[in-house]
Amino acid sequence: MRALWPLCRGLRFLGTRGSVRREHRAGVCLAADEQQPSFGLLFDIDGVLVRGKTPIPAARKAFQKLVDSQGKFLMPVVFVTNAGNCLRQTKADQLSNILDVPISQDQVMMSHSPLRIFKQYHDKCVLVSGQGPVLDIAKYLGFSNPITVDSVRESYPFLDMVDHSRRPKILPSTAVDLPRIEAVILFGEPVRWETNLQIIIDVLLTGGYPANPHQPDNYPHVPLLACNMDLMWMSEARSPRFGHGIFMVCLENIYKKITGKELKYEVLMGKPSAVTYHYAEYLIRTKALEMQWNKPVQTLYAIGDNIMSDIYGANLYNRYLQEVNCRKGPKAMVQAGSGAQVAAVVADEEESAWDSELSCPSATWCKSVLVCTGIYNPHTEVPADPSVSVTETVFHGHRDFRIDPALVEPGYVVPDVNAAVDLIFQLELFTPTPGNRTA
Image (cartoon, rainbow, N blue to C red):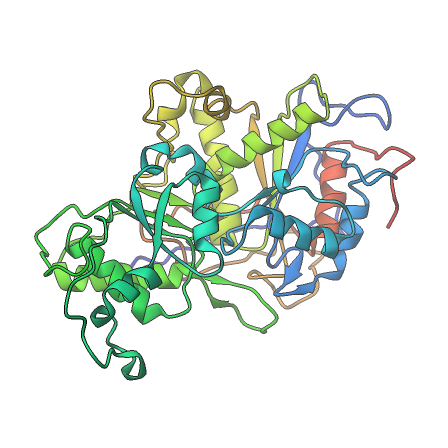
């Protein structure tokens, strides 16, 4: 069992009942209609804006403060979700309906979005696991030859034997030739876990030929890329539900039980991976450019409900911003202090201008804001005493991320997303223009 750590100590609850701690930075003194804001906002979705399909009441209030009378955002806003079962446009349409403000797909970052920069896998035959339009998602991201677990099962029906009702009545007389599977991508939790676990293990233990005999000594296995490490997430149920992280725990332990070796990931994406925040910061810069801003976005505020995902990730990226000089390029995009072998490495020497821009962040700070409407919920009113602390005794992060108390301590804790927006406006001395919509 892993050591137990006190994770969140001395958290400060901020809102209407407490005074706001102001942070002064050079060049940030914003007047109502005088200067553009120098900050951008990163919003988690589940547990912050919605619970399952039910909108959180504070969400619409908050977003009415972020847009002008024409519905245009007053600062760059990006939605960073660990969900990966739909296309960006679908999620943008859902958010537009929930928040009553127009959201474009360019403002939405799914857990799988950073796969765009892993071009060394785009021409390979990759097995994709998850649910929803996984083939469409893979092709949208640039993969030219994806295949699904279901297609492998259809070619080799004798591989899927757990569900007696789905066992083949007659085994095929001739084998179907599938191309060698050169990599596996885990988009999100599948519907039939036993089928996906079996076939993924088959691929890993046969070097990409799942119908062949297992060769446990064939190590390292074919590359494995995973999105969304969330152990749990918050829907309408009163307790958190299993997330893709639970599926990954199953896969890791099955592989180790069979082989005695550790399952290895080529890359881990989604929060709290630093590459996810690097990509989100790129989207913030892109939105600022579209708004014709002539000053860089200096501070990112990441609003989330999950300490081991949103808070850990934002703090990890803040550490990266402090430690890594952007001139070192994309090969320096390593998770500082995470202990994970995760890097956004662009292998092609002839990088596109798009990749070059992604490699150099302009932000200098990434600050975490924890809300109490999702995974983290104190079940009490916000205390007036700012010394009240929150503790976690079980590490819910992924196996490859080490426990670091500094990374799981939020910069701020507020009741909900509306209070988070109010807090950020006060910290940044930002007053919305008179023409913006009111709550």
